[in-house]
Image 1 (cartoon, helix red, strand yellow):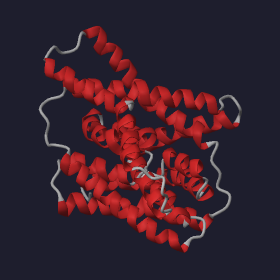
Image 2: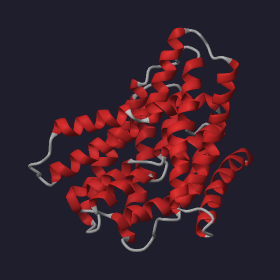
Image 3: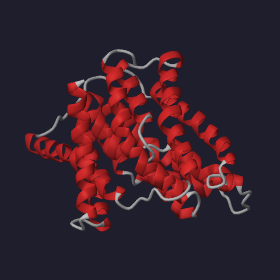
Image 4: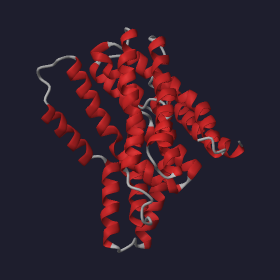
Length: 315
């Protein structure tokens, strides 16, 4: 249990530090945004670029991993849309915001640091494969869900597809993976200077991501819509990891470490993009923001339990 505590406590300690500095007005929302941009556009892409550019031949293709993770996510999405009917605060637009909150986990700022801290650099490939399409696919699904539910005559599949393509083409994580793959094909390797710079940037990814998450959490509220908030937490942090676990255990075959990454990512609390979607459309904002704030706190306990089950061979 001690190795798990030495992973989880420093991770959440960095989150608390960012939160405390913001509440003390040493940092503000603009500072947090700047740190987050550095993490998404520089640090994590640098880590993925070097990992892909220098990696050994792959253990497996991404298709089974994607099927397991996004298959479990899709079922959770549908269940959330159904459950949202019973909560007035979640039922708007067919529960699109609820489904987004139940499916979109905090993978970049919490899941990635946890996975890297506990399992090491070996998980960079599977986590990169999930991260690379996670946000664009879920944004597309949420926009489609909302517009179809509202029977909007203005909905355009072509326009939504174009937005998805633009999101992929301008996503730093996707670009890092693609660039690393292309550089690997050249078989030139990495110059020591470039390698050292990439190592420095990669080393900054975990602490800055966690600190930025703490800064952002200071802006979320737990007020109002408590029943909807707990429903979202149950869907995201209980139902989805169970479904993904069943997928990797009984439906598809992936390397054991990849399976553990998929389940860990599935168990992460609701991420900030779900709040952005809810806020943008002014739907289910209190419940979604509460699910992010409280869910992140609960993740300190749930992640410890999950990692223990993985280390003991249960998962």
